[in-house]
Amino acid sequence: MTETRKQRRRWSWWYLLLLVPLIAVLWPPFYNRAEPAWIGMPFFYWYQLLWVVAGAALTAIVYRATEK
Amino acid sequence: MPDVDWNALIVFTALFGLVAWMGFAASRWRSGDLNLLHEWGLGGRRFGTAMTWFLIGGDLFSAYTFIAVPALAFGAGAVAFFAVPFTLVGFVFMFVVCPRIWHVCHKHNYITAGDFVRGRFGNRWLALAVAATGIVATMPYLALQLVGLQVIVGALGISGSGLAADLPLVIAFLIMAAFTYSSGLRAPASIAIVKDILIYITGFAIMIAVPIKLGGFAKIFAAVPPSKLLLAVPGPAGTGAYSAYSTLILGSALAIIVYPHCMTGVLSASSGRAVRRNAALLPAYALLLGLLVLSGFFAIAAGVAGLPEFAQGFKTFGNNFAVPALILHSFPSWFVGIAFAAIGIGALVPAAIMSIAAANLYTRNIHRAFFNKNPTDREEARMAKRISLIVKFGALGFVILLPTPYMVDLQLLGGVWIIQTLPAVVMGAYTRWFNGWALLVGWAAGIAAGTAMAVEGKLTPTYPLQFAGYVFPGYTALYSVILNVVLAIGLTAALNALSARRASFDETVPSDYYA
Image 1: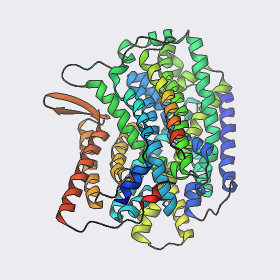
Image 2 (image 1 turned 135 degrees about the vertical axis):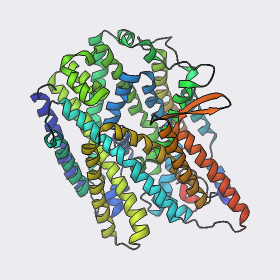
Image 3 (image 1 turned 120 degrees about the vertical axis):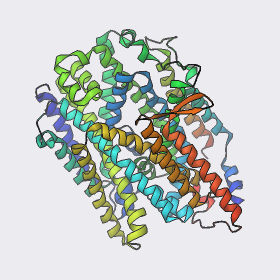
């Protein structure tokens, strides 16, 4: 019982933000196409690379928000 | 095979000599008593944010990754790009899960995942299952690092027949074994800095110089056959390449956090905060990896497979020769030396960490749990050092005696096996509800089903699951671990219902799991 209470105290809604990059990359229909290309790179590739950057930024935001 | 490229070989050897020296010197770095297992096997848990970044980055993004993933792009196309979102998802999991594991392990001086499982569930057989799985899954992974080194040695133009062909590999390996023995985890940690700097230089050089030479990205992608450029759109009877792609991402990301070499990297951090920061900083490597995957396409566009000077290399190493051939084709020989050293040293860092991780597992969860229950600290550290040697020579034996495809198959099975430890380790970090025996049965069922599915699928990563007339191809590891979790939950509920007295052993308390 004490465990659930303490875990709840550690829970922060900010963690839900981390679901965004997961959903973005785990659903291939979002990005399995060639257009729009960027500097000649098909959408499939730059979309996923962009999510690496965005995912890192979101993780950093959640880190800042949850660090005491 | 091309003739020996002396400029490249000299640069390569000089850089290799530098890291060998660093490996031995590392024993005095932030020195601790190397006769203690946590000093030898976890670097004294003293690595801050920056060192942990180099260590985990050097550990997870190995030589084999940098050769095999672009090779997959070269051969199979778009599916190889799963490695990029996989690392992103893996770091998100790491951010959430690993600080909890770090805290509890720090509090109780747990050195391995097996230590944690034993302390949490009080079941040494479950800990044995976790440890044995870790060791067995690590061996082929370690062997593949040597395969990466072998490709590089071959590309440098060093060839021979019989034992002479493997001599450079054996020498590099002996040096690595010696400095790991004497310096422990400090050796790969210090070398990882050099390796990472070299690999970033190489990555950016490829990314900038090669597209300019080939006339831009548009021309490169135009040279790639359209069928390889995107995932095949699934037909009406199933989810096809889409479910294969996303389950590969998810399953690999879940597996990576329980691989012993990753766990060792995480536990060697100096604080839970360093682990959390790293999860946000490590995607820099995922970006680099993404760019390097594209080099598989560069190799297609540059037409290296058709050039006579590389015919022998492709014949010997298959598609794994694509990146070395591209580097040889595109750069002056002194830079070839730097690039090859980056990949070669990139093999030593994870190989050393993997052997240390496997040695820690054997020493703590097999030897100490079953043979010598009260070793002195000195005996324990000595045992781990010796086991690290045995593990490495075992892997070397694999590489020399078995053909590469066997190791690729074993590595594939290793991923299916290691993920079966996830319920005990990761779910165990959140709840003590599970019954240890139920977890053990789930583990066994997951291993058996996963292995059967992988064999039936002719050792390809995905299994075509059929349901109600539809086909859902998916990563075998993910499918089998779902069975594992369902069984563990069902059996725990059944056992709890049968006996009123619940298993109560747990040497950890809730406050151990956070700062």
